[in-house]
Image (cartoon, one colour):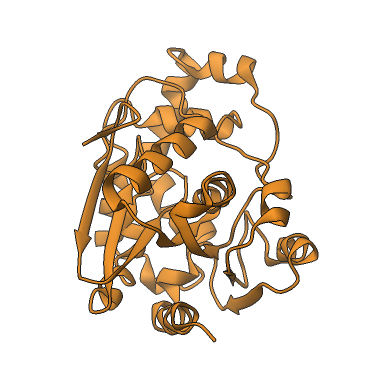
Length: 269
């Protein structure tokens, strides 16, 4: 469906209070990040899993994928699709966008579970327009796009930056990430990301939030180290931090532990 004039693919199942899963931004990412989590909550929740614009089955376009585009599209998703206050589970930059929405439209978000969130120390730089323009429709951009789609690149990315447990990087998983990158326009969200157009500073919004929140971090996260959690805790010391033995997506790598933590958080004190 179209939301904020962006094609957005999503799946929904279960009955109960709405629970929305929002993936992070990176080459080949999609709602598949939550494949080991979402189904575990359909007994008591109306569960929504979406592919952000330009990722997975949300068909990419030749456009600049800015933080503002993502925030507006996710806001539209919560208003037009979910249509009631939801518990939100979000990863990386998806977490930053969710914090922004929870601050700007608090009636849409009941609680936040944040997986390795960015927005205070990491991915907060202003956009680099010159670098972005040097990538779009250029030989350099074509080289980067081709490199991203390569089997070696996908395997290296998953093994060195996403998963600590190498046994989880199966042939099937690599094919899913490669398939998510096969569209000729799939490089556009990546161009926006590496040019900092997708970055968002949410320090002020985070400090002002009233909704309950929990953070779950991978102990060996390479790009968003767990040491960065302290910046979030300095602003909201009441927020619980859980650290699991994993890299970028502890919700997948330690799914049973993550699901238990999320279930406990959703049930409340």
